[in-house]
Amino acid sequence: FSLSKTYSPLSSAELIAKEKSMMDAARFEHCIGVSQTARKLAQLNGYDEDKAALAGFIHDYAKQVDNSEFEAVIKSENFDPDLLNWNRAIWHGIVGVYFIERDLKITDPEILQAIRRHTTADTEMTTLDKIVFVADFIEPGRSFPGVEEARKVSFANLDQGVAYELSHTLEFLIAKRARIYPKTIAAYNVWAAE
Ligand code: GDP
Ligand code: FE
Ligand code: FE
Ligand code: FE
Image (cartoon, rainbow, N blue to C red; front, side, top):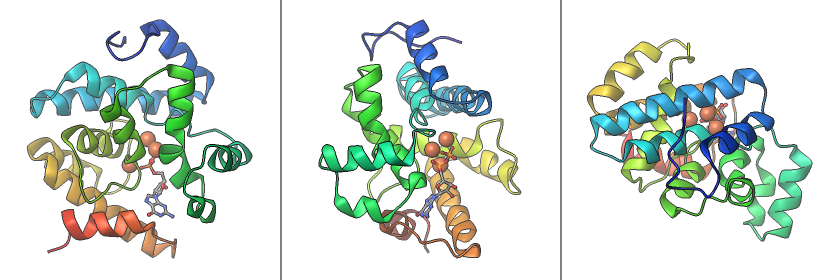
């Protein structure tokens, strides 16, 4: 496994070592899976495969950052203070980009936006946003009921993969009476609602 040198001044080995230092072995394997799936989706959709593979690899870079550190960064870096009403499920993408820019020296705005959007999706999604969002959901390590159907749909049609994932995630969140982040609902209305 290696990464293109185009999008960070760090070498592939340095990127991989930093990513590994931020998370446990299971999460690291997930990131490898998302990277490989993102590459495949890029190939199927005529997108830059190396860029998709890098974005997929680093999408959960901040997944295991402490709550107190997220809260400190939301305050010190002037993120929307409403984020403080949410939790790490929402923070690790939107606020996680801060750690990715700081530690991995990645500045490409498309990559950073795809990572911001990877948990909630958004009303407007670029091809890379969709690739990372969907790859996260269907990578080989995922095993929820419906994942085979999600893979089939997503490899056949990326937009339909986004729609499938949004409706599945909303069903899951509502079943456990979790609060829904407004962007997730707005995205559902654009991509998944009839
Ligand atoms: P992961 O980081 O690879 O585990 O996957 P994601 O970043 O896609 O999702 C992280 C968690 O956030 C999952 O448990 C999702 O179900 C949850 N999640 C996604 N959207 C929302 C939302 O709108 N509200 C809440 N409360 N959780 C959400
Ligand atoms: Fe995530
Ligand atoms: Fe996801
Ligand atoms: Fe993930």
